[in-house]
Amino acid sequence: MGKNSVLFIVMIICGYLLAQQLQVGGRLEQITDPTKSNAISVEVAELIKGNKKLQEELRTLQDQKSSLTESSSSTSKTDASLNEQVQELKILTGETVVTGQGVAITFDKSLQLTQLVDLVNALRNIGVEAISINGTRIIGSTVITETMGDVPLTILAVGSKDVLHDSLLRRGGIMEQIGSDGQATTKDTLEIPSIK
Image (cartoon, rainbow, N blue to C red; front, top):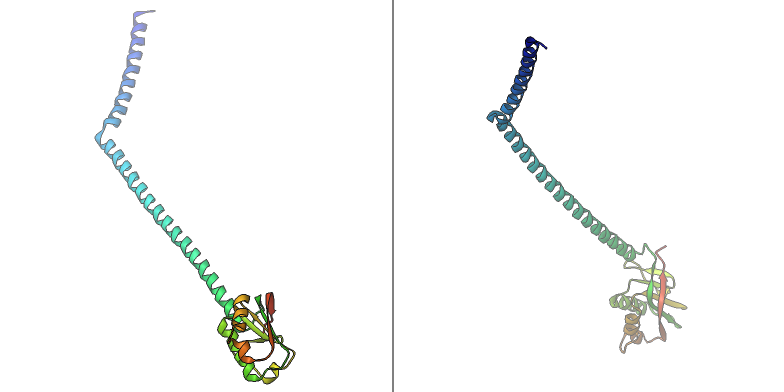
């Protein structure tokens, strides 16, 4: 190999090394350049701000979800309360059949109109859910007539059977005031029809 060939190879190697040095220097300049690192700092700061904003939005959405859940729960309670009130109104207006414990009152003799009215009022004062006379539902607007007191006479009252029984038959109670030979029998289950 001649001197010129060796010189040529050395020059190629030096050229290659010089090119590599320039590339590394360029990269080093990019990394250490204060304007470039400033841009990175600004970008990182923007990302942090964006992240905080997203966290705030997430908290807001979670609060809205909690509020909606509470509102839904409150709506369910309101619906249940309204349904209960509607059911009570249906009972008061006689639109629904009423079943439950109570008393069956029977008489062997006919009752006068005033006695029958007094008995119905006494039952209401004791606290009944529903009353019927010989199968006819009695509500607040029902007109009680003389013929309703004819025998055979059976009055059903749904409510607390023990309270009703004791109140009707106590000394000086309505059964004693009426003075007719009536019987009040407790029942575990009674059914009072709706108004026809």
